[in-house]
Amino acid sequence: MNGEERSRLKGVDRVLGPVAWIAAGALVVMLFVGPVLIAEDEPAESAAAEQSYGEDDASAGGESADGEALFSENCGGCHTLEAAGTTGAVGPNLDDAGLDAATVSAIVAGGRGSMPSFEGDLDPAEIEAIAQFVSDSSG
Image (spheres, rainbow, N blue to C red):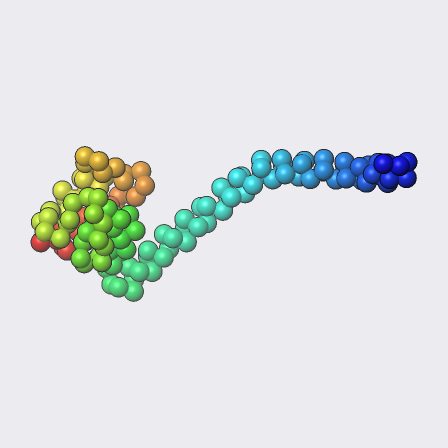
């Protein structure tokens, strides 16, 4: 490597060195600020989801539509219930369970066996809507 090539490489190094440091600094800032910005967006998305449940309620005329949507979203991955169009195979088939709303509500809120509690994930009105839908839909 001759002197001219070294001189040219040193010039490139003088330019790219600070650029690399600036890029690394920007990346560190994004890593710290990004999660905070994303967390600030979540309540708005959650409010939109809650509003959509209300719209389903109004358009379908009652809790059963809300209970069906909530069941499909939160329970259908594990439970089969023909009325909701779900075919989960992890938990019991609820088509012939014959459970009353109070029993379903207690199980959803507190969990049972390998089923987790949904008390912190769903509000009491949502749990009651699911319970009413399941008790009305199962034999």
